[in-house]
Length: 95
Image 1: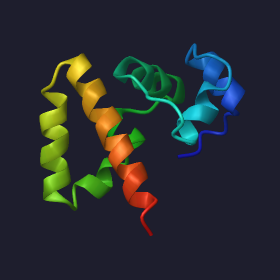
Image 2 (image 1 turned 120 degrees about the vertical axis):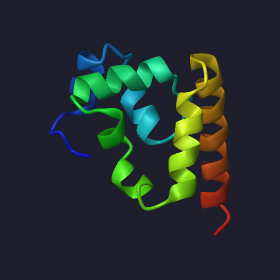
Image 3 (image 1 turned 45 degrees about the horizontal axis):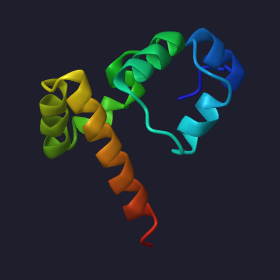
Image 4 (image 1 turned 180 degrees about the vertical axis):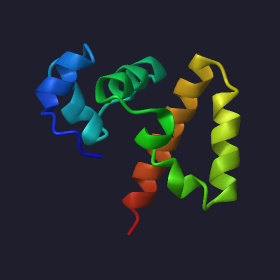
């Protein structure tokens, strides 16, 4: 997704710390649900657009997983996001 903002502009719009967007892009920080909400608001996109849900519509398992995650508390969602980020990073590194 490209909204024409620099990292610094997005950090300012979303009220994030310096270099936070860089860390997000490089998966070197754990992101909280509230932070994702700030980023989506700053980018003026909804959940579906941010996560490209059009891809999810083609995968029933992924759709069901997102439904289950939405039903969790904020703290539980944070744990799931952290676990999935770690798992995806490990899988990408397997090549």
